[in-house]
Image 1 (tube, rainbow, N blue to C red):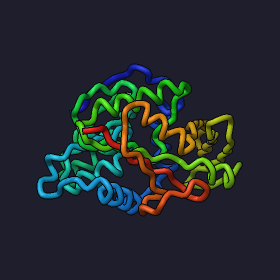
Image 2: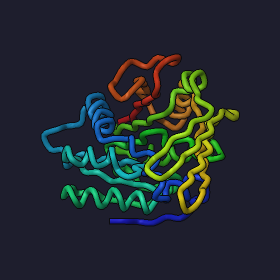
Image 3: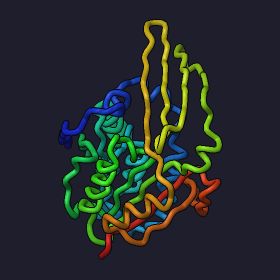
Length: 258
């Protein structure tokens, strides 16, 4: 099943995530990492496993579906949502090849209007903070809160800003098949920005990524202000304790009160 909502669709992410070169650049994001992340989330959230199909999960920015598919393989009822029709089609094709039931919806995360529909909403691999206005980030959190059933969980995966700022690599080059990829990274205000130039034998293309960085206390405050409780963090996909100075990730867990 596919629904469409084009409201708010302008932004760097609308074009870049819908381009076939996106997956070629990020092919290193493998299934093993996704499985580790999903297993860690399930170990903390602890859904009932006797009837997993009754447990409803939304991956609100699923991309090509690495995590949504892994949840589906475990028998849960999964909705894979993304703005990009190209990435959604990749998820849909993979689900078909594996004979996995997967509901696909094409919505801007700012326009998700489900109510009391999910027991778990996940937003993984730095898929939060894309928008120019902080009010749009708040709107996403508000939408997730409304979409969750009482007692439901929200898992939000962010870059931990302190080690990123210390270890940011300003420039790198790499070759992927017949592509030459030149990447420039910088911190500007509260955002990390990556400018990407991709050169093939036929053409040169330029894309940018821009993601807002959230300090631990900042994201916790935002979630609490929008009604979430039981806020906690881990520092990587293996479930290591969160260290604000050294942890590579900031995997935030919180719940809608019962």
